[in-house]
Image (tube, rainbow, N blue to C red; front, top):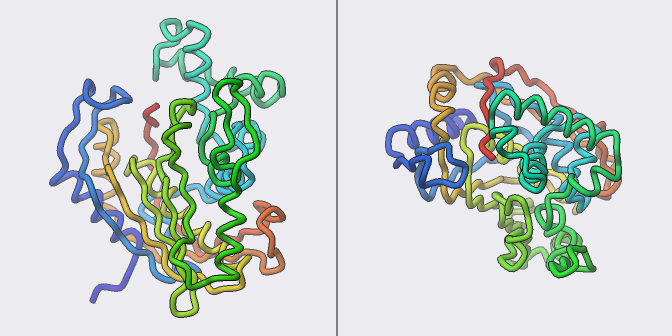
Length: 319
């Protein structure tokens, strides 16, 4: 049996999509980019505390993974906390919304040089002007909201009200009823999706305590396989490690289940390049063992050891 390596799992997924995937034209898919994709796939990342599934066939920015995860777990839905720490993952969606609401989409055509240059101004405004950020930096009821405040959005007033803290409930259940098959965090709320700039892609989490370890399976409805999936696999493996630590359990396996797994047409060349690269040894992540409460975690509590990847491969995000 071939020894597990996340790059082998991931490269097999890329090959499967490139060789067996079906085309969706620019006219058929939401972003107007065009994709090649499959529906339904799964891979398992065993023992994530010892073999952290961060790709080595291209560099993946670990700090961005950590800061976005902590942002989600805090319950925030505004990009300003991310912008303040240099995380650019979510900039495009509120920026495009700003252009739309201010009738500027024709002035700054999507993905053009003018679009990119003007987005730099937008991000600086988010960073330096809190009132501007409060008005234009919100994503609506999405990840952090569903995790910490599920069903707590009033569309009539566009305000957040008290909802249900799924994260606290999951931790409580893991500690008090580890045999439960209902340790679930759902990020899919059909009644609130119309009011968010992007409904969650990773949208269903189930934890299980088996063999004395905590395991996690995540279902991802829409999978940008070149850009997003490497982040998603690593980030939710880290989520598993955090939950295991605060619940005083060893971290076990992360299972990544895919719905629509696709490669955008403007990523085909990058994928072909990545498929030529040989995997390198997998890294390890250490979390400060003194921290037992999620709200006390900071980016400095995470150490990435032994990461020596191939150079990064860039690609345009599809908005």
